[in-house]
Image 1 (cartoon, rainbow, N blue to C red):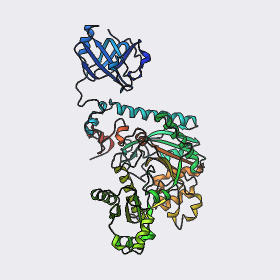
Image 2: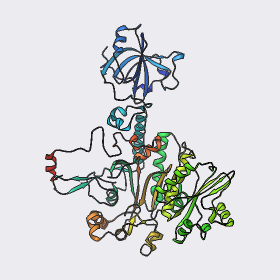
Image 3: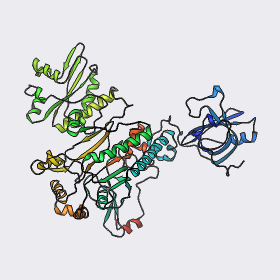
Image 4: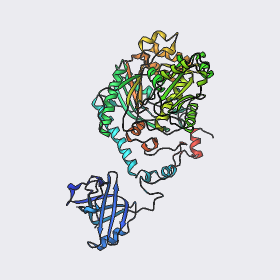
Length: 589
């Protein structure tokens, strides 16, 4: 029977025992088939799940023979009646495991060659092969579930933001290059030879201009581009949930709306009800306790400052650090004194990777204490150190001495490495908090100048304006990051809205009048015509999807990603172009 006039009754994974006895038409890919001689079973797959099909030669020999020609990944349309499976054939691991379709007609819509790998979540297939055949890789149920979660997050975003008065407005992809962070992707202009557009690293200037334009509340799910070296959670193109609002004068104004959106996303995608307000942690406290501005607080291993206790000791590493005005800090891995020397050496490499020259340690086993610097401490000072770090029998303590920036980075990485190695993290938990009051500036040791820690449009905390000229590193920013499970899920700030302060901010980061005019002239010009107080935030959509689906690879949450070398293996890009195209653009290689 030709089923071209039949519409699909519903999708494969949507059938339940309530459909028993009903006629149905189903469509999908053949996941697998089992020919038992007189009965043939097929698993038909679509993005909702699998439905078993039953072809019985005793009912219809011609139909059975037609079905026998089918192979994996054929595309079918099949009609029949939903029946309950025999008690012994029920599959409790399938959502449709109680039922099957007793087929009475089949239409082969498309045949398929044998794929280069099995379409299965159980297959151990190299990533490059999967990316080359990404359209086949995307048939895997796990990836389809991830991308459906992504779609649900975007849907929740549009619903929530629209309901709360935010307008969805698109900003340009072809803009001006304003290099102040990562490298821009440049697009040559054919109409203006020798001149270039830049793809946006973010819509930062445009969304602020929309506030100056009077749109009051804006949002956009927008693609951004940065020409950076890649890693597990970074791609050359990524997606932001971008938000900006006028008359936001303090961080809480924006944070309240952001919390509402995150609550809605978690409720709609994972069914989790989050608290009405999220915890807040000042940047200085996050760094001193966890060594990170994106702390994972699902476990302890907090940093302890022992600088005063060790100052004046004969241990050169500690003493030299204290004399240089640096700090000595440590973490106490409670109950892990049985750690092997090999494991300790591996953790040494972790702290070295983050700039420290090494670490000292105290290991308090049942049979006694092993310490890499014990001979340099008298008894009273050593006991004071044990007390300061909260040491007990069964613990192992690690110490790093250096500039605060290095100590924080090294111990922050170490506490994560120890927690992951020894299973101290409750992966079933979602740990959500705000980190606030970042420094407005950071000092660039190589270039010997100040940089904006976030971007040069971030407003300072009003009471810190008095430090702007004499001690700018003391100035805090009205900036805020939302951290989920030790990952920066999003961040933003209240923006500068007065021309004088914006000019001073540019000057503090060593931009000349010419630099300002060339990079931001149109933006500075707009400040002459009235600017409402405003602020905003951007969530990394890709990272949100990663957190909500439990994957640690950003390529899992993007339909057609690039590999670690920024190459699209499926379409083989980047690639050379014809000389004619280069000539039209006035380019010569």
